Length: 36
Length: 248
Image 1 (cartoon, rainbow over the protein chains, first blue to last red):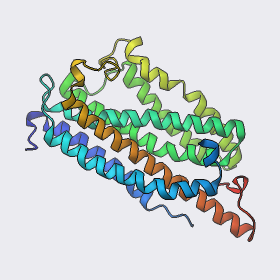
Image 2 (image 1 turned 120 degrees about the horizontal axis):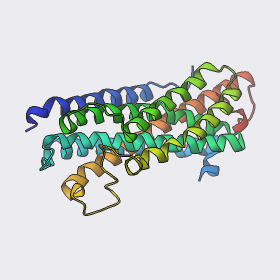
Image 3 (image 1 turned 180 degrees about the vertical axis):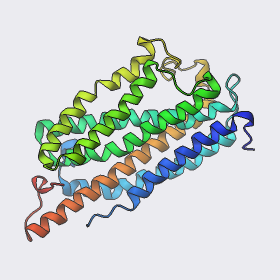
């Protein structure tokens, strides 16, 4: 399970960067305040 | 639909219900999609496990282009009718759009190394997507640099409409020029690359990414509209807030 052999680094790299960027977008949106 | 939502009050009423719906669809989509993509789907007979990168690469590329199309449409509305809510919407699409473009490039590069033995190739598809990222950055820079927001809105909308020429170039680049990318697969059901075992996680992730884009955009538009309304109220207490008054 979740063992992707020799290409694991590319797969986890792609999912890791996606998670980081999407997490950042979600955090940015969640922390938006309608009043300054 | 667009003219209905052009009224800030009606927009806010719509967003109150639509935002959580998009959020819930995105959350369910990501949980299901990640399970299908990483655990339940099989290896590809040619690519092996690296096919799993497709489940984050293709939705990111799709959202990058969808976001820019939405941005260009909102800019067109802004340019013709000088509608401030259209400017707010266009700006709201830009940051997620740029982020998804960045993800499409990086995940594509990470997919390219084990598949094509190269991280980067200056072919039509990759180059046009890189140009899309630069267009997003330039669009955001226009808003950031120009202090007069009405002037910035005018310039940004013209720039966004001109930049839209890049979207069909991205789409047809694989047909027009020699490319490492394969031609369109979705339009040819039954093709080797579109078996249900691959389509199900891919489509689930596409729904999740699209719903996330909707949630992000609605959150930002709502925030900007409320900010503009409160600024207007501070300036002129008791004034009725109209769309002309919603000025970021």
